[in-house]
Image (cartoon, rainbow, N blue to C red):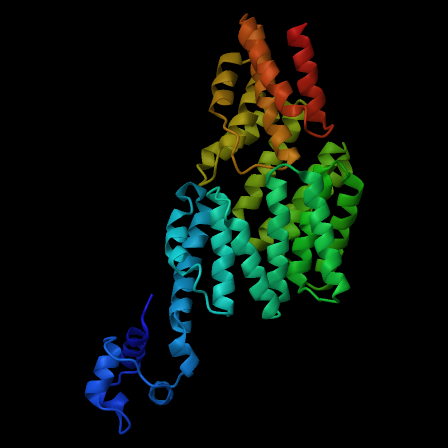
Length: 405
């Protein structure tokens, strides 16, 4: 971090001023050189004069970290943070190392609050217990600056942390308390932030097994987005609604929401939505209608595209399809390739993935390897027991009963 002299020198050079030009008639060139090299301290009168010459407030010069320095740091950190989110394997240490020297010297401004917010997120993902302190500090700054939407981001992150710890009921409670907090203060969140809250609350309702309230909130959110001509979160809402329709065995609703998603994907030219729809369709054919050949064809068509996308979920569906088609050795190969992402936390996602070991148990049993069949049936049962009563749970428990008895 720059000293007072270094900050003056940096600003002088940025303004294209020589020592003589900055010194003017009120300072000598020699004295200004001493100040810039930290060999002399300016009086308050001299400091005010230097600040006026540089076109900044004298308080900015006195701050241990200048506004310019904070803005440059934030720009660099924001760029790194986007890369980290897109590629979690890269981890968060580089960002932590950049912010740590400033953690106790943040001036009271937006740049500091945002840096502290990012810092707390990175510390959380790095499994440091210190993350909450800096998140609280960021919230205090946002509150003081009257940045209500940024304060809302802090609230949703706290609720999301509980969600990632699989404490779904507490996560939902925290989010609802946050909404009440903003309502009581008559704080008006912007439209995008409101849709964030709606989507998260609906997802959390799904997680605790309250599909009715989840669907109610999602429909209200879609209507709100339509009324305000906002497309934000529409694809996420339709995706969850289509999956909920699959779980409810509501064919008409499933077709309706899938059609809406396809239209949105075409409008947005978003290939990822198409891939999500392919995965949903393959999963539906495998786990619900048992049309294994159709599921297999969908997966093969996706794999032939060689998309820049994680194929682990498609490996699971291909393994299930091959099992259904009686190709046990091939099925086992694809199931073994499947890995559950450490970033999956929703019971729906987890329950889907826990089917893997149940299918492996069935294959091993048919191959005459009873011990391995029991082992994987036990793994599947242990994983699924804390999950809500979804079709996956019934399937896995039925397989466990069949294998162990």
